[in-house]
Image (cartoon, helix red, strand yellow):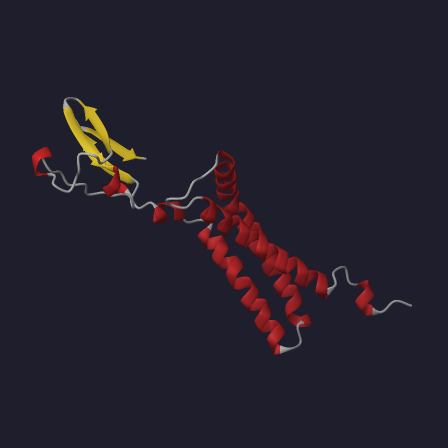
Length: 171
């Protein structure tokens, strides 16, 4: 003779494990690219491929994961008879929903904030640039500019117009 619990398609402990795996997978899709692509850290070609692949798939994966996790939470809610189990359901969903939001943000832009208002100084007046400093030099239509790499260290990007042409200088 089978009991009512044996007739259910999904056992609650399996749903809890699935819910945890979905949350961990969603978090991994968002967190791994952040740790691979960090300022001032050496990056490998394989690491960059992995990071951009995860970054491109993370919006879809976290959306699907959130929908499945919410369905599991709704299914588990009446079966979680203790208040702390219901609280655990809510607490477990919060990181996944945060990952789903974060997957749709351009967090690389947060790390590499463009320097939008580059100011100029004539060569003789640029006392903050040493003769040994590396610069990124751009010449366009007779206009020349140089961006000191040391001063670009935080931003990595300068948006500018040189010789009437909008450019982005980066390294």
